[in-house]
Every structure is written in C-alpha cells, then in structure tokens.
Image (cartoon, rainbow, N blue to C red):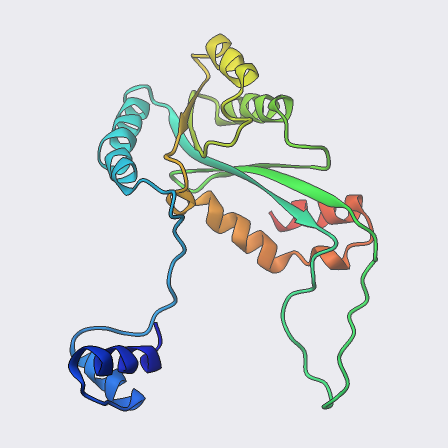
Length: 220
C-alpha cells in the first residue's frame, strides 16, 4: 500500500487529512519502512509450513547427521529463447533500441541441488522433465556425494510419481526424498540459484538449444 492510499485510509477512518510526506514520516516514526512485498499464494497453508519448519525439517537434518548423509535442496527450472531480453538500454528519444535475437523457439531445462554446506550439483537437458530424468539425477547425486543423500524438493507431479516412489524403494540406502509443503517455494534455497540463472543467462541471445545449454553449463 503506498502513502497516498494510507493517507486516504487515515482520512476515511479518523477524518484527519495528511500529506503523503507527512504519512511517510508518521509511518517511519512507528517503525515502518517502504518494502517490496513478498508473494505468497492464497492457497498456502501457513500452519503446515510452520509445522514443517519446526518439526519435519529438524528431524530430516537429525537423521542425516546420524546417518552421515548429505541434505540437499533440489529444484528445476527452464530457459526459453522467446523470452524478452532483460534490462533497458540508452538511446535517443523516439528511437527504440534493438537487440538481435535468433527468432527461433527452443528451451533448455535445469535440474539442480544445493547441499547445506554449499556444494552444487546440476544437469542441463533439452528434453522434457520426466521421472527418468529425475531418477538419473538422483542416481548421479548419490554417486557424486559418495554417501546417502536426503533430497528436499517441492510437490511437482514428477516428484510424486509411482516411478519415483519405486526407484526410492529400491535405493533406500542411497537416497531419500522429502517433499515441502504446497506453495512454499521460498523455503528452497535452490530457488535463489534459479533466479540468478535467469538474471544472467540471456536465453533470447542464444542461436540454438545447444548454444543455450552450453552457456548455462558454463555459468553454473
């Protein structure tokens, strides 16, 4: 809510007219500051999120420590060539700057996991994200870690599929999957990596899917 709306609300409730500048000073005097709001889905169950943070995650961390295992946070994202080039550029008034792009539509996907101590594991692929892709990633993750991995991820349909459950049952000594509460992406630090990739990899500049995949791997 901006200061003009706050001033309108104050006038409606109290009958007192305040300038926007006066409202700003009053809000700061009461410990408030202008901030960009964080987005939260109205479908989110905050009680479940709080319970998960208070009880389930500490239990996962404790089990991993007892097993000498690794806790990782996993997520996937995609980069598309038909997205607009980010940012702005200086140009004479009335002359819109032009960025040369391939004009072709292609996409690459990223599956990554960040360990609690900062190690990064990732794969870049051009096919659709499927159970086969995810089990292959889990297999490589456990192999590269050299010990059991506890993987925390969102409730993507692939993560909840029968094929994934079957693979996990066959590999209980190597990997275990824990799903976060619905609509709570901010719990996953891998989301920060996704945002960083999308900020720095200009997919619209790539000439092909292979070119985009190579640049993404280089950046990661």
